[in-house]
Image 1 (cartoon, one colour):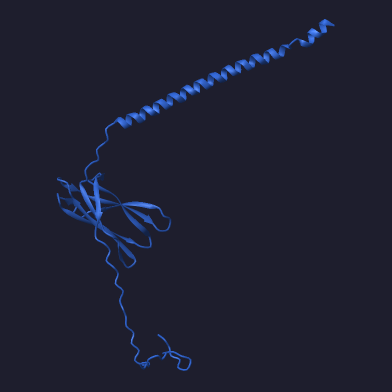
Image 2 (image 1 turned 180 degrees about the horizontal axis):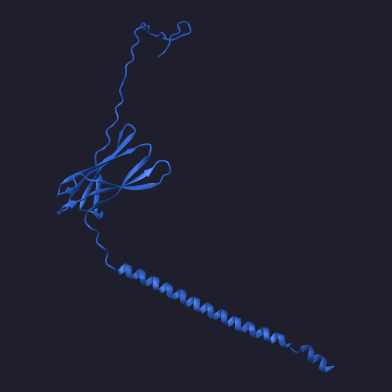
Length: 202
């Protein structure tokens, strides 16, 4: 009787194996978590070091502008629009092969394209001005925006500043006076058109 009770309380051998496997799995998971935490901490420290280095680095000075671009309002000429302006050399050196870069927006699909428009004359002496103009079909393009200034045969970008150019002149509406000689002047308080005297109003 005592032997049978001892067999009931005896732990089966399979449970010891499961306990050992569980312990090994727990150790492996803990090790993976520690390695992952260390990796994330190292990455965070590197990112912070990069931000601190950028903050301590002296700011890069902006290049002083070498040209002033006066952008005129677009002028309507029938079914076409004329985009243009003036480029003034405000530096102390000659500027050759100067081109204005325009960004054009198409009406049908809204896509943009860039186009180089040469400045005339091609060589600008210090304090000299040159003009640029581009004729576009109003039905093809909805807008044109200044995107840059290029110089030289390699079309290298040139630092510039902008200002308002010529404004579009106000449209004048022609006033027309219509005179009808067939109608007699009405008396005071009398309607020109009534059921008794119908008259055609122009």
